[in-house]
Image (cartoon, rainbow, N blue to C red; front, side):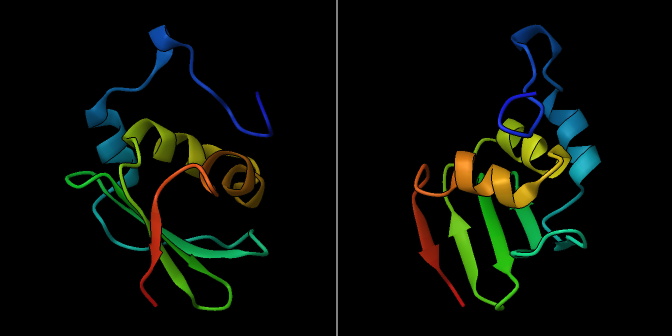
Length: 96
């Protein structure tokens, strides 16, 4: 575990099919245990991560790898993961 989230060694990474079936479609997944993140969704076709924060602002992060999304939703602290691994590391735009 690194920075409060699980990283997969290269030989243990889940396949794209596992990530897709595990995370579903690009529907919002509500996060019940985060003080800053309300919901997330991921579009595997465009590699776009959308995050809705508790203040209802929504940001999209482009060129976001599906394995990184898998690690994000599996992390023990999504806020910590966001601050360490996503924030300021990917291009983003505010959409709401």
